[in-house]
Length: 149
Image (cartoon, rainbow, N blue to C red):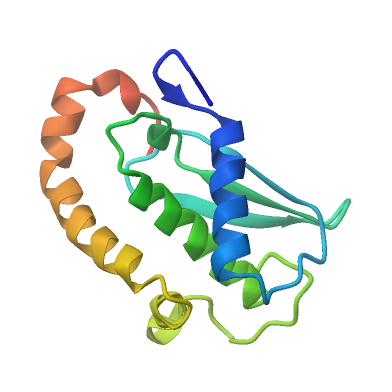
């Protein structure tokens, strides 16, 4: 699961599988999906991209989230957020359901509809504290964010 006190890609794949099976089982996986930790960033927690060469989808999760001091709920929220984009046809072969991926709170509404409102609430509370403590975080852990975010 982990090596040297960090979460690894196998753990991420497990979280993706858990969320898909329990909350997104109605969304067909119509292409190959990869998930891994990406670069460390201050504000971007995740991203999703469609690779046009092989039609695969790539989900990247903030490299800071490898550390255990980031709650699992935040990682799950980030993965679920990207899965909503996939389900809505952004960075996936599915037809686009909306013109813009975030307009009008469509992602949070979808997460609530799928029974993941607790993750949204946890995230909203956590992110306020994260942002308010970001300057202290950078002060004490500058090597986390060197050249990133």
